Length: 285
Image 1 (cartoon, helix red, strand yellow):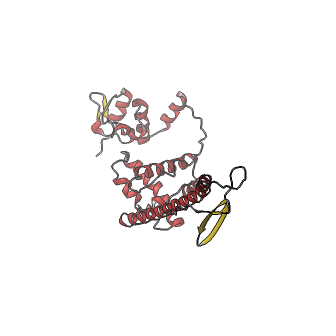
Image 2 (cartoon, one colour):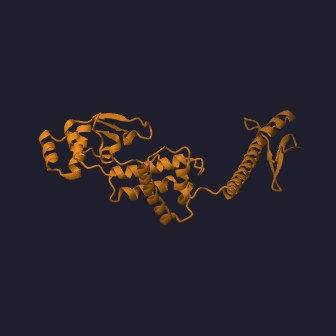
């Protein structure tokens, strides 16, 4: 509680004085008006008393508020410690498994998740080496994120690979924000590296002919599939006989890229040259 100091008026001769006590020590002062003349009137003395003692009242209230704020902060820290004891922060070492089980993560393919896991493991190993086995996601501050990003940039990784690492960490921290009780995502403010564009050109018809004529065996068949169907390399390499109807001259294939989001097959006509090559290819299990 603030001490409500009001002071004590007394009169000596014709002039009024005020007396107050601080920590047991008595102080007194003569009261004067705005012109510096001694106050001799009771009413003027009371007004001067209120005005003079107001500074002490404000100081007492400020001290009381500071004390209350300190107590509230101490209580908040105590509650945080209690909550952490009952619900321990998410360790970095367990974060990847939690990410895989998270219902709000993107529906990534198996190969993408494999790459993500490799990238996160690299970060987890670094955190263990730099900050110990008990490090949690909440321990990853902006400064820690900058330190990890710096060692990525100064390594042998390309700008594109560095950016992919940082994007994956941004994703994991965003997905696990509530689980790990994060207040911010330290990876969002990390500057990505600029990727220098690399010029490419299409092969000329003569160059395509040379490549195809030089190819033999399975490579020749693979190139023919890509050339005559327009399918991606992954689809050509995994095409099954059950998806190929040589009698009708049709390939019925669900592209790998859209298989999870839209499992709708595409119908690709089989070029006569490709049909002759496939007919000469022995079917295998």
